[in-house]
Image 1 (cartoon, helix red, strand yellow):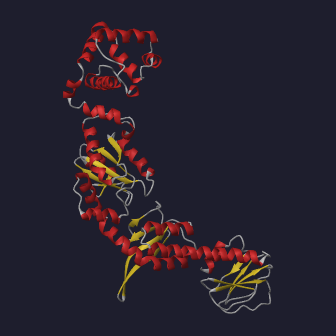
Image 2 (cartoon, one colour; image 1 turned 120 degrees about the horizontal axis):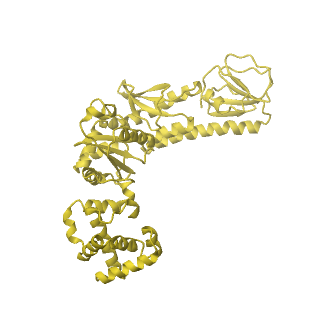
Image 3 (cartoon, helix red, strand yellow; image 1 turned 60 degrees about the horizontal axis):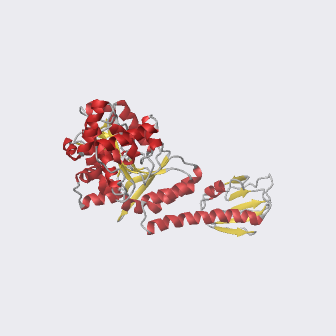
Length: 452
């Protein structure tokens, strides 16, 4: 463990320090000064001690007088318990060793690069991302926008080294410098082998999404999906937005011609498909709610019609979700809530796009309708709410804002006019469906969404 980092980690134990040599510490010596540059000697303070060249000493029971020294590293602590000092130092060395073990295990188990970045972030408490060789963002797992320091990532081929990217950090402290350079060298080849496909598939993924929409998936598409770290059973959703009048009208929504400005590589991609903007989001990898907030800004600014659908943890449902969303938008079916939470309304609205469905409505429904028109009896609305409320007189009367005796009278009137069996569940269900259909065809019942 780099001695500067160790001193930083031991901040509560250390009162002062004099670090002159950047040594890597991995051993501890108690009550005995070691001249090994990788060993930290823990000693009781003695101003007369001569510090060997390149040694590392931690004095406990330290006094205010500083020992003059230029060739060694000295740490001062007023803690008077040597065993407590040892436990603290050993704890940080063990934690550091476990950190590198996690790095090596991640590499040996061929885990995702995201996991490597997460391990680094957890240990150093700093955001880290990957840049390509042109210092353009390649992988930003932790969604930050400011970069303070970058470290080169190189791949060795024979006797030559090729720069292919950078490990970039949001903040940097001097104590981390040595460790970050060391980490970059350790993980460089592994990251290259894992992100090389990502680099090559950054543009191909847009073609893959179009193929998913059309239902024509190739082996190359499956490779592109894997290269960006996605799995087909991740938590996906899509937003389908109707774009009318050409892209010029929406200049601030697109860059470089037709690339949506909110595209979020690795997490959210968009394509333009026959006058529709389709956004595909992987919610398992990262919460992109901030991006969706900005999306709402555009939909409100341009009064854009949009649909959001969950893919039910199956990426291959993209075609079905797109086709359904497009049909809803093309037919101006109004939605005031999440479509996944309102399937009954959508089903009836879609069914009633074809007026031929009217042929399925039972004849007695029209008989009651004509009685309502001719006599102002409101029998169909009464029948609807009576059945929706599971034949509860009290609830039906509340929905219609009438006395429950009026409900009894109207139901008796219905039984006089037509022959129906309201004791049969199948019959009741069929009547409700018929009433939903006829209302959508000619607004007979004037049923609102709250009534459904």
